[in-house]
Amino acid sequence: MSLEKFIGDPHVDINGMLEKFRHTAEEYGLPFVGSPRICNTRPAQEIRAWTHEKYGQGQAFEEAAFAAYFVGGNNLALPEVLLAIVRDLDLPKDEARKVLKTRSFRDHVDRDLARAKELGIMSAPTFMAHGKRLVGAHPLGVLKDFAMGKTLIP
Image (tube, rainbow, N blue to C red; front, side, top):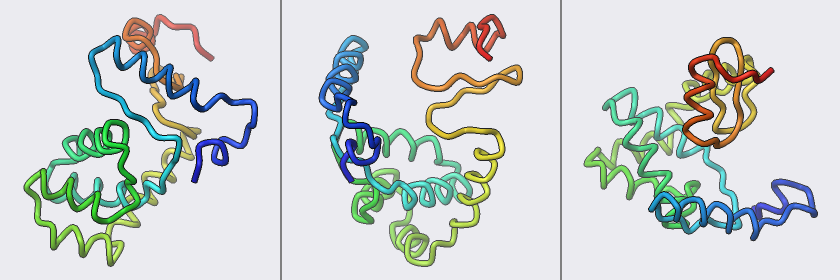
């Protein structure tokens, strides 16, 4: 699905938004390709749950999936993309294929999503501290202040 359709606001400048991300990434020496399309990340969420629960590799999977999408422009809804990440993490591809086919981590992800909804989290990233939330990407100083309770955000 296109970002235009997903966002649903014809006044949003998608190319400008992606260019801003590209520029910010460049400032920090990070690669960024981006994509004007959004994909169904549910399969990736289920594989991430499996990598975390079975192998303690959730964070490694998250980093690899992030790079696959934002740097490689890959579609995280495609099993072959997810299985390539699993292979690169040296985890069993056959087991991952079975997780995708049987959806054996569906309930785990459902619980995570229900918890997010309960907390009022509707987008990522969302940071929570001191009973408050901070939504979106922010400079490190803002995040530190927020974590220390110095930021006056309702």
